[in-house]
Image (cartoon, rainbow, N blue to C red; front, top):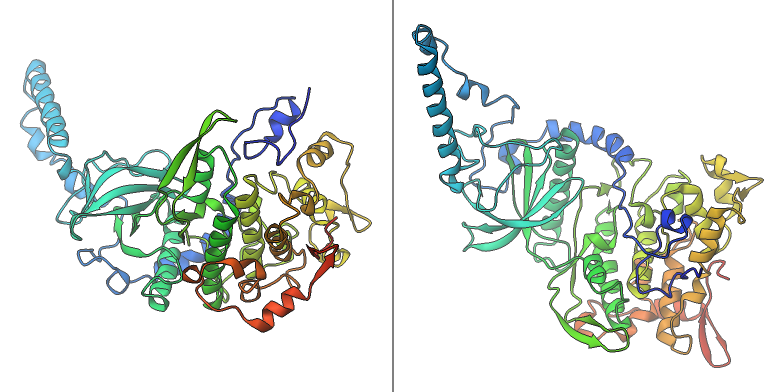
Length: 505
């Protein structure tokens, strides 16, 4: 039996369970939403939510300042017991007929017009407004929210809730993406934090030139916080998945990487850390594409027409002066200082961007694992040994023995890491092409173990890899001083430009 090596497959990654069973099929990774960190982070958000003023902070002109109460509809639908007292002497058959008529009347009321569902002028939760057991709002296509948003379809679903495609009838019937948060306290509190961040971004960047998604409106719908956004295309992950996990062309990788760095640098300049950067949270402005047939692989392949992107999902964004949860980021993009519980800052976003650019370039996840120890072993396999100074400071000493990672390379886990990871330099697709070498150097600088030595986004945005960007896609002129600083770290070997990296083998 042959084992497919990472980087040689046309799929994104191997599943660990399937590897142990000896299979060669691939499986989409499970995205962790780190509920262990949600409880810690959102408990601090509760104080902010309790002090939130609806009148002061609402973007919706028709929004009510009434606070939500779970049993607010009880008074509306409580039966008047006195109206039943005069019927107690009626025959059983008469009661059955009248009960049947009432049930039939209730069904016809709730299904006669989808526009009437979920609406009540008094602001009280309508009888047909229900949640499922997970806290999602139950809705049908054609329903209206706030007498303004008509639901067309479901765009996606996540841990937080669902995203709906809606028509905004107060804005010339424009289509918007409506994020409907679960009717669960910790997710409501997180939504208030996200709204606060989005408001700050609008204040700092009203024209949207820093490529963060624009909030159009928000409101509280019977315990579901709803946030309306501009409608965008597919995420960078979904496009790649639909395209057989093919890597993006290097010119598109360059443009997407520059935009991502530009957007996150804007957050950092305003003392905000995103903490959940991943391909799923990067959306194309328009994901239109050309489809061509590949005769060698006997399949259709897509070529993206425009690589303009927008950054989304600020539900976990943290201001520098706020409480920092112990665990942040989705597993595959989590920085070593988070895994080792050394404390984190804006540098953890830089690490995540390095992993994302690698994924754009290769079409595979760099760290495909769900275990801390295995994650650290993959880091060492790709980037070299973890510095002993970080190991000594770590609160996770159980992962180490004599200042070295306690890892058995001859175990099944060791074989999995060995077969699916290789030193970073060996991922270069074209070693004879200087642009590919510059790209790997860029990634290596972002994947420095020590967050104090890791490059900042203010530095990396002037990396030589971005010199080839067309002028209309370059938002700022490169600094000659910084360019010389980057180029001084290159060395020449038989006429080729080779990047110098942090422990790469």
